[in-house]
Length: 392
Image 1 (tube, rainbow, N blue to C red):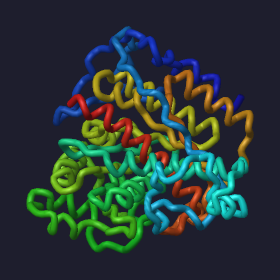
Image 2: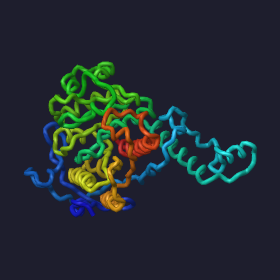
Image 3: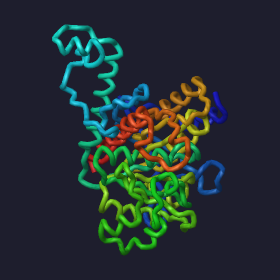
Image 4: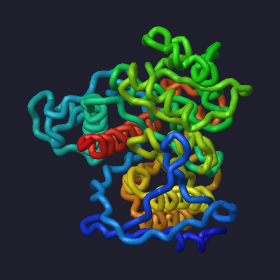
């Protein structure tokens, strides 16, 4: 169907819904510092990957509803647009609230709502439920999200900024997003502000950080209430220990940590990030190379076994529409490959000109439909966090 798709048969996993498949893998080797070592990429000269044999796979929760496309508008009641959350019990869906039918309803005259009115109320109620899920979610420790895909240009950094920003806007803060790429990533460039300090300086000073006020000095506060810890271009390469040490300090002062990763799965920084992650988010585009790289990430994590395998089995996929031409046939093939790989949560993020500008991203400048799609994505991530962390 597209270049490289024939390789996908190497990565197929049985669907785990209803009847989990038994799989067993050899215990992954550990690098210095106790971090799990992922199997080598195809073509590398590292030790050969052992073929996974049977072990019990965890049951995966049903997929949450995907974000429903809605026309861009300015009358949303979402708190992300300055409104109050919809009260679901205010009025039944059968009672119209707008237009001439709404006027007649206020006079006590019975009318049948138009399909558009029913769809509008159902959409508002669905968004309210998503926001409520995010707002009410709590844990007995800090939780973490890793945004990863080896393929560049699929929207990892925008997804990191906007997913963390959406959760922070709904929960009122306490969300940090950090640059966890081995070499300096683009997080500092896509976030708001021009901070003087960042990830490189935080790694250098990590032993001296004892208070929230000290840590705040290394962040770029966002209008969404999230805090970004980006990197200057000249910072040293991160090790796995660097990522783990920074994560421990960030977790002392934030309830949610989001990590924007690099493109090299076998880099120490990536392995360190995997070791301190609760939920994996994989951005893709509607293209063959993007999904093939996503499938390779899933394969490597599953081959590592243990916690990395659980991350793969419960991953949340965000399909980022970036404005480039898309083939419906390719889109269907992307969905099939992900479904065959056992992925149950796929959400679409619509094209947004503000993201496509490749400059600083401000949550409030997105189109309403894009922000609502990220609310749905945040709810899916929170739901997976609740499942993955509740039994710790």
